[in-house]
Amino acid sequence: MRRRQRQPELEERTEALGRALDLADGVVPAERLDPARGVLGRAGERSAMAPGVTVAALLGATGSGKSSLFNALVGEPLADVHARRPTTTRPLAAVWDAPGAGGLLDWLEVPERRVRPADPRLTGLVLLDLPDIDSTRSENRRVAARLAERVDALVWVLDPQKYADAVVHEEYLHPLREHASVSIVVLNQADRLAAEDLPGVLDHLRGILRQDGMGDVEILTTSARTGEGVAALRERLARLVEEGRAARARLEADVRTAARELAADQLPTGEVADEPREVGALVAACAAAAGAGEVRTAVERSYRRRAVQQTGWPPLRWLARLRPDPLRRLHLERPTDGATSLPAATPAQEAGVRTGVHDLAWTSTAGMADAWRARVTQRTEDRVPELVDALDATIAREDLGAQRRPRWWRVWWLLGHLLFLTALAGAGWLAALAVLGYLQLPEPTTPMAGPLPWPTALLLGGLVAGLGLAVVGRVLARVGARRAGRRAGARLQSGIRQTAERVVAEPLAQDLTRYRDFTAALELAAT
Image (cartoon, rainbow, N blue to C red; front, side, top):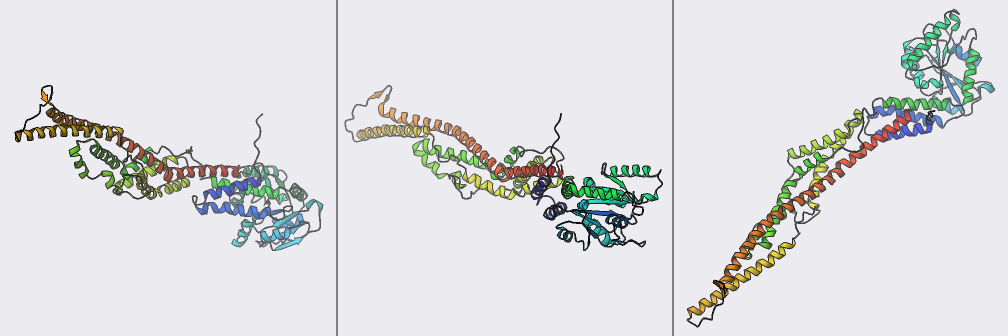
């Protein structure tokens, strides 16, 4: 057997609705939140006042006989009853033994009140006679509508001629359909109907009430003139007081109604992502705006320049120093917290970043209510300037490997100098032999290295081997430069991704979580 789900208590509902309102603040327009805030305010105020008192009000259209029924229930002609309409112009309260009722009536703004003799069955009851809900006087209608929002129990007084009146059903019963548990429908003046007509009228009334969403709300028949049904209505009011739940049930219905009205256009229209969608497109746009491609090219050129300085032919290495270091020119030779000298993002590049941010937000918020989706997307797009500014700092802080010196550079440096010194030794030897020949001095025997004298072999071998070593070094430098560029590009991509996630994706994820928490709280309050 399936277990019935426990319904949340009033405190849980009010807490959930308050949490939903806090989460929606700044996203949902204030005019959509104000009615629910008003309900929470009334719930807090009513809960703190006279918890043992039940306030029931008679509401009805002109001519329904509210005041006559009020007098019949009270047992005395407290309310004025005249043929001239409207008769009741301001609310009147009949108060039985109800401690704290004075402050409660002050809160309800009911100036006229009459204390009734103690009645054990009605202890704790306050009965109000309200102005007509369809009064020709706007002030009367306003008072009736205000008190209909605040009293604990609602006694709808209808008459056989106007029980289907649109004002009663469309403006009151249907909007207050969640309050069926604290509502009593009274068909007054039942003595005007023939006995055989009464069942048909009641069946018709029940059908209309079901259309209003009132379900199987209790219906009583009364006649203030003959006294028919008055005792039953008084007994029903006594049971409401005895049960002591009317005030809480009314507040629960108020909170539930406010939550459902808010949920009408605030709940998801589809599945909402738990996390932001893939940020790859945004990272690519950010890389273009940050000049990551230019930086990678600069890393490769800087690597080749430094490689030539270390591995080139020693007499020509100084030429590499004449070319400026591309990374130094961009202030990227080492990580720093300062700014770079990279060109600012062009309008087209910044537009690309904005498009990437918009697309990320729009796809991630699919399924959100329209108000939330528009607001979250706008909040995300507002972070574009911050993101563009953060990209330059990301590039500046990244270690591009400009200070890295591969081990083979040192090997090439040593071999290059050794071969250069070998060529110098051979040249010096040959120069010494030339000087001796010029001075016609005896020349020593020159040893041979195969077909070549050793001095010549040393000079030519050092030159050829040294130049060959330099050529191989340039080839290796190009290969190493490409590798350095790829490493730098990967670091830049990683840094840019982290920046995009920090500035855009993480706040967007918080907004997604905020919406999920909002809908969960709203659904709990509306359950």
